[in-house]
Image (cartoon, rainbow, N blue to C red; front, side, top):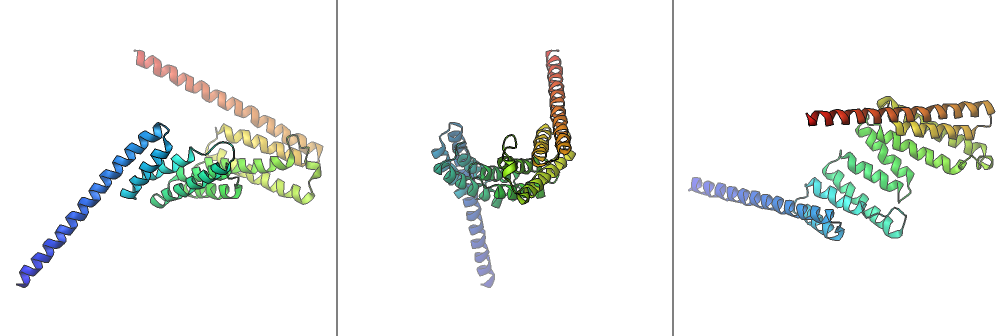
Length: 263
C-alpha cells in the first residue's frame, strides 16, 4: 500500500514537472515569435508596435536578452537630437530599459555605453555619464573607448568655461583656473592611457590636441603657451598622418581582395 502511494506521488511529481517544462517551452516559443514580429516592426520604424511586441516577448521569457536590448534601443532611437521634454522622457525610459538589460546580462557593455551616451545627450548629466564610463573601464580595462569618451567630457566642460579663443579666461578666478587645469590634466591622462592601449587611435589624438590648446588658454606664461600650442599642432598633424596611412592600408587591402576575387 505504501509502495503504491509512493508511486502515485512520484507519478504526480513527474506530471507536474512535464507540464512545467511544457509551459516553459511554450513561453519561449511565444517569446521568440513576439521578438521576431517586433524586429520586423522596428525595421519598418513602427516603434509603437515594436515596443508592444518586445514587451510581450520579455513577459513570456524574462531572460530573452535580445528582446530587452531591442526594447531599450526602440526607446533610444526615438530620442530627438535636440533637447525636448518628450526627448528627456524617452531618454529616461531608454535608460530604465537598458538597466533591465543589465539585470539579465550585468556585463553588457552596449547597454552601459548607451546609458552613458543618453546622460550626455539629451540629459546633460556629465557626472552620471562619467560614472557609466567608469563602469565600462572596470568591465574591460583594455578598451580605450570609455577612456576617450570620459576625456571628451573633460574637454567640453573646460571649453565651455574658457571660450572658443580663450576670451573668457580673464574673467575666471585663480581657483577656477586651477580646477579647470585639473580637469584638463585628467583628460590628458585618460587619453594617454587610451593611446597606450591603441596607439593609432586618431580620435584620441585629436582630443589630446584640443586639451593641449586648453592648457595654452589657461596659462599666462607666453613661453608655456607656445609650448602647448606646438604640442597641439604636432598631435593634430600626427593624427592626420596616422589616419591617412590607415586609409591607404584599407584601400590596399580592398584592391588585393578585389584582385583575388577576379582570379
